[in-house]
Image (cartoon, rainbow, N blue to C red; front, side, top):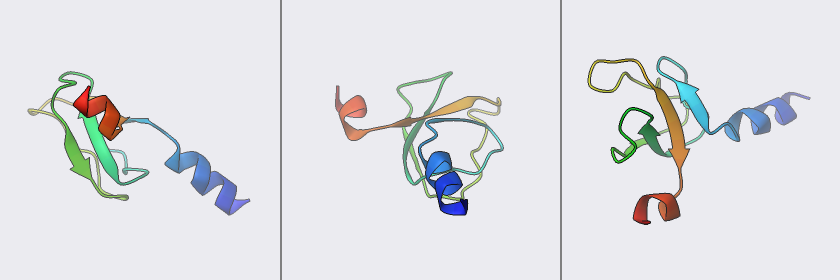
Amino acid sequence: MKSIALLRERATRVMPTGSHCPASGLWSPDTDPDAVQVFAEGHVLPAHEGVPTVWRRRTAADVSA
């Protein structure tokens, strides 16, 4: 059961500031969707420009479009 929970957590694409990043990759804050940052799994998601935000996981296709 633990592996199922981990897979579900890694599939999470939206996480708030202060949460641990569920999967390595590209992330953008809701407050500035054009600002793309790379976070490693387990990294604590920071505030963006000093303001707590919600981070969305992005794909390379999202970023280049």
